[in-house]
Length: 198
Image (cartoon, rainbow, N blue to C red; front, top):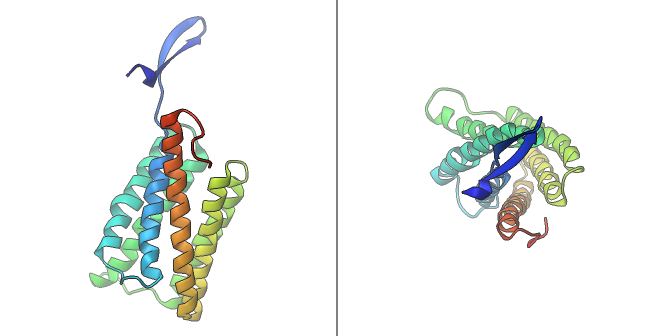
């Protein structure tokens, strides 16, 4: 399609350059939907099952890794690190659950799982600082996600089911915000204007 290309001039020569699609909506929606479905479990709506694991590998994990690779080609360091890291988070989360079931490793104890969640919270809090130069939508995603990781770590270390339940609802909010921002980017680009605020 003609709109996928732009003509640029370099040293007096006219060149045709391919315009890449914006991969951020793919990554945001993959993260958002998978996060909502996992946190329905944390909020007590259903047990942890293969649906969550499949979403973690196929959509939350793989789609974000693809988005990360595309953002790398676009020269976007923040998005490369964010999508790559959270895509691989989903892989690590699923592997963490299935290795013990396969008899290949011991299940994580309270201390190690707390450390896992806490370090993801620290990483997310630092990434939140990066969003202060980007957009309110990303600030909302990373701010609520940092809170989610810290709540999950606190629920794990204390064994307090109420904290984990609160984390579940907070995680649903996080996922919905990410899904909204991703879909808003799609709608805004399609309409060629800021149709939905982000």
